[in-house]
Image (cartoon, rainbow, N blue to C red):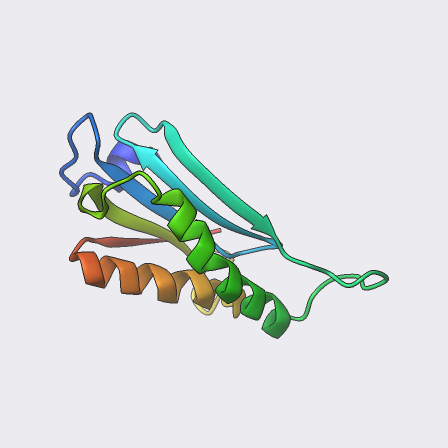
Amino acid sequence: MAFSVVFQGVKMKETNEFVMAIDTSNYTTSIAIVDYNQNIIKDERKTLRVKQGERGLRQSHALFQHLENLPLLIENALFDIDNKNIKAIAVSDRPRPAEGSYMPVFKAGLTIGSVIASSLSIPLFKFSH
């Protein structure tokens, strides 16, 4: 889906206004700041830790790591951006666009994204992975 269609209801100028995107759907916690022209202004990521010899992470361990990573990644992404210039939050909230599609790791990004959107009185857009 095109950026201009998805954020059609958000009034953005061509300069200094942004959308913050949050993804906690996999083994990387990700924050991006995107401008009106779909340019990625900031891209902050942190890979989740998997113990040596393990094949992966339990959802509860991945969720905990995402929650640990998000504050610093958001701080880094917003380092030189005025909060007033964030006009919307986009967040992955489920693995696929089907009713009942759910994985706990998505709750980290959805919760933090909801808090930011509510605090800044801006829209929250939810997407499947």
